[in-house]
Image 1 (tube, rainbow, N blue to C red):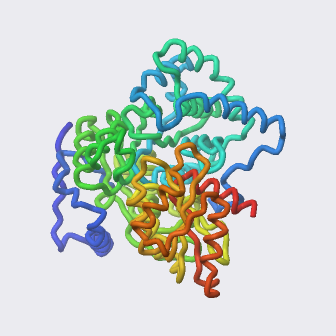
Image 2 (image 1 turned 120 degrees about the horizontal axis):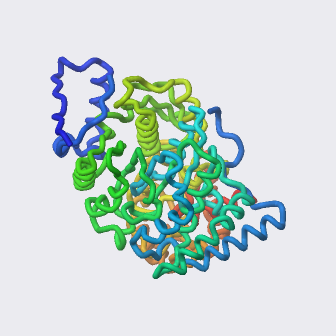
Image 3 (image 1 turned 120 degrees about the vertical axis):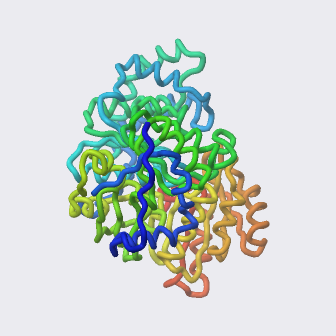
Length: 509
């Protein structure tokens, strides 16, 4: 791969638009670690839908026969290794794909990894591709309420009927693979195969695929993504992936394939060094947030935020994003760059996408369980933050977008997570916290969580309610104290499972 030196610009070379962009990049030094010093010979990209409708989360099947069939499939899947138990290899999923005729090679793919923001970014990529009239398949995890959410076609989860049908279509091949391998296929591996088969059957024009964990040995990594997207890397799953962002980047960088285009969100320096080195080794082209693309400006707006984004091909203004927080704006910039790269902008084509189509796409984006408002008076917000970096981003977004005079937290977490770090991130914004537990077998007990919460918040700010429904009721009552109805709020957080169960309770209430 040939080296290309970074372009040099003096102050007099910058036009007002570039000057504004460079100033914003410089102001974000806490997220952007001056990647220019570690380019390591990487090539860079330098180029001369209506509002959401209805609930994006599928309801439980109303047909009792369909509901029964879906339950039977879920029960069969539950007999397999869960998503936290794995043997790091793609041998089993590759063997199954071979038996199925390699359906994952029937369409081009955009592969999304990182620590935080993967699902929201994947949803934005999907919305953009849909707006440009491409038929899409999206595979994300975990689900908020229904397992069928994980596999989407054209922006909507596949039906329960189609989910069941797809499972039974591939089941004989799954059993053949099980018999030939040392370990049976896991829950996640079977779902991944179902997604790839469903996309080929549709057929789709493009697939947007989110990794489950890591990258190199993740079950999704039997695709050759022409675009590899890496959202911000921070510490999570440290027992599996590594104890530093750089070590974690070694695994996540496994999605970078030969001659691909890499869309790199702002990263810690050690992670960026690893990822750029991997890009060089794969002769991949790199576009980096804060250099080739980024957020030029953002303003809080009713129901979301107003953005100007700089893509690899040019600038897009007047974008309304119906999601809250600076982190969502950055996700939007990454998604836009990914779609530009998918269409060859920055390499084959020096142009921008149709701006009105881009605006329409972003205005249609939803991301259930991510800064999602499910009630007013008091306002109840759901967010699936489950690690310190995610919690810090959520805390900042809540403060900026809502300005609650009194905010009560409801927190239930999973064993093995940095729960103290999550609670410490929320401590400055929670007046009180109600600790509870969700129904997962991996849930941290309410009493154990309370012990950590008391150390962070003090005993007078912590309430324990082992049942999630009781915790929600207690938090709403606390938020309404002293007649602060107008400025009161509740934030439910700690895990995707917690948010999904709270969402069901609040929607039914």
